Image 1 (cartoon, rainbow, N blue to C red):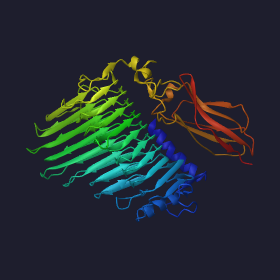
Image 2: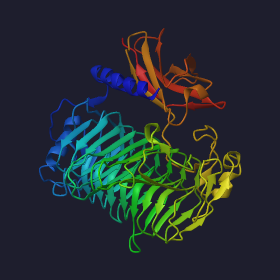
Image 3: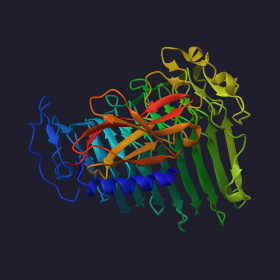
Image 4: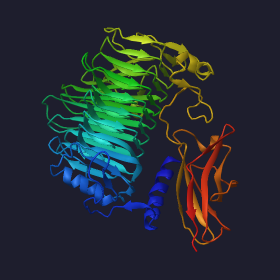
Length: 569
């Protein structure tokens, strides 16, 4: 269903652009903005796709726009063209203030290849910036490099930057090749690398799928190490906070070491792959969740007496805690963890795997966990990769809540995991096992704390498990613009968010319409599907109608946004 929905979106927005609706379609050019003064009260207005491209061109030529304000005034369709990120290095970074004003950027496509370091996203490199209220829908970021890469749909690299109220549904595809030089990769659904105590990621979500491959197949016997930091929201988090955010889609990772004297480590988290903090700059992850499955393939192969090491650290929220002074509060993971393992050649090919429901690996005493739960699967052992685990050396360590090498003693209070998640080790930090029906019970939000938790009802979007009060959850139903308008008819479209609700669990879906300004709607039912549409006939010419899609789940009706359209005269 999901792939069909993506193809439909591509077709729809192409049709939408051709019909000249109220969206600016990029043809590859750039022109300067003409409205505004660049101040907070009178920002420069981004009124076309060419204006956005001009911002990229000027930033990448050395204009930082420090203290300058921008505001989007129109939706933008990047039209499948290859986008050049705004800010391409620390030398040419964007340092201004960008308000998306809840507008949407459609079809963000970026393709990068080669061996140089890259900063990839709508924004490549942000420094002391403020980014807010941008929605990215559709597109693919495709990076195939043999050099360091910082990749996120909103920003590849963000230093001392606030990113607030942003959302993404574009996908990320990374294919890194190992060479004779070591390099690191930082990949997040929203931000690749985020650092700085004055910067936060807040009130934002990712719905895009992330696929990452690191392949080391060199013949050199010189020792090298690679590290890859991959998160549903942020790849590498240092000194910054993540507040009221969520990841809803799948992460698929391949760590393939087929070479000599090489070491590749992948840090994978549903929220962030790696967290680094200090007493001076503590890190807080609060009111944040992961719904995406984490699939990690960890392979090591050596055909000689030289070692090949593959390490994987996998956590439902955080892959690896490097230091203490990290607080995880009011968070949950509902994504299943699927580790696949292979190693070959006695003790020379080594696959090391560390898995936890909330945190994959703890390396610090002063970490704290409060009011959290985990309900995804944490298997008691790995699954052989492609049905063959090989005859090499393998380590698999796991924890129902977090894997702890027993050298640290973090604080855990009022945290839980589902007792049939598959794990067999509940070492410190100790969490309490609960049956699924208790986690889904009416009293569970009270147990976690009613200040931050609520029951999953009306509508049910989390399988009955507690949801965050005031949490960031994308709309279940998206209203798309009306097309094929004539004097007597029009075509209506809507999309169901299958990451939160499945069409087969709905009892009905369709559209309601009425004459603008009147009170009574007329309903038209559609077949249950992830994308649905209907041709509305028998309309009056030169007349404005109001329309909204709906679906019913658990006897509760959910509506998409209301919009108006006018028939031809």
